[in-house]
Image (cartoon, rainbow, N blue to C red; front, side, top):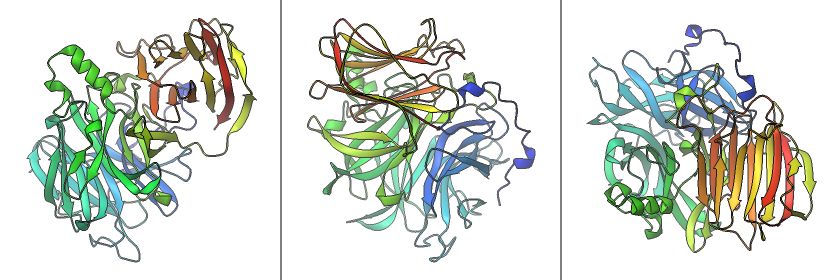
Length: 519
């Protein structure tokens, strides 16, 4: 069995920055985390494995941490699941329930959980300097793991072959396992097939395409019904990129198309640049093409998003890492560093004649309503909303007709004197939604943190729909029923808890405004 490393861990350090600890987003108790790994639902529990440094709060000593939840909001952290050792760091990967016991690690009656992860082999080992795919398995519901004694099971003798996402394909080509991984520095997704999770055969590759200025990482591939119609199914390929995302640094893009069991073919509407933006010499043309790429999130802090295997009712639910490699190791939190995004349920919808992902945060039903209003006119005199407060997340739902207003603004986590706050604004002249954290609180810990992110948002019958989740040190915005999402970290001052709504340059009509809290 892999060591839990529990005995080697220090005692939990004091919570130096407790006000930044989120209420409904997962953080490790007192260590570093990054990419979500091995997301799987099994026997009533959602399992979140994650890249973890068991010995500190910066990247290193990569192992798989482990947490479980029944509702995707409250998590219980467990001992380290798969530990790095003197031969390998344990990089990202996925977990499947081997229902048919194809691997022989379990049985038909009691299927094993099988982790497919990247071994980053250390200097002096037989595979020194390469990354290859390995297996570990659990026969007790994911609580303890054993590494396969014939690892690795797939190597390309490459230094940057990683992040396997494995799923069961059932289609015209037959029934088998498919691995979706990356050659990170070639900006390629590579596809393999297997009957037993141990022996893999190459199928095809995809890329470069669209955003390809940085490494490609953490891919995912899955089918979804378009507009809920099971007779009209498309496939979604998620590819995370670092650096080179739309808001700078790391972020996630996606493609919509078809997968026939061998290769992924993107729809023409998914391609801003079929051979990649790096092939566009003109800077303005490349910037325009960047805006045409399909982004999971237009903010600075959503990366490495991947989906759960075996989620109930065939739901497709993803979680991302709420951070950015530009400043990840410098976040001003202690003793932990980094958190996950909220779980988000994905659907495919027809949006302006194109097939696009929409995302809905998983919030459950246990919200406490703080205020709700009917329709009213909003002018330049700001309306104060219920304050945020420690230990609870705040959920703000609004439907607003900008009308004659040039700009509608929601100021979040503001200080009493107004000098500090995170500003979400919609500008009617260019139809853009902007999340501005330049005066959000502590922004000095890294030169790239103070920023403003924006995304194109078309009104629907003249209406702007917003769902905003504020949780101590983060803001997640779902606009137009989740068609556009922006996620940013913020680190407000201890007294910055006020929320305000206002219109500038005219009047707007608020059709709906509801504020609730959640812990």
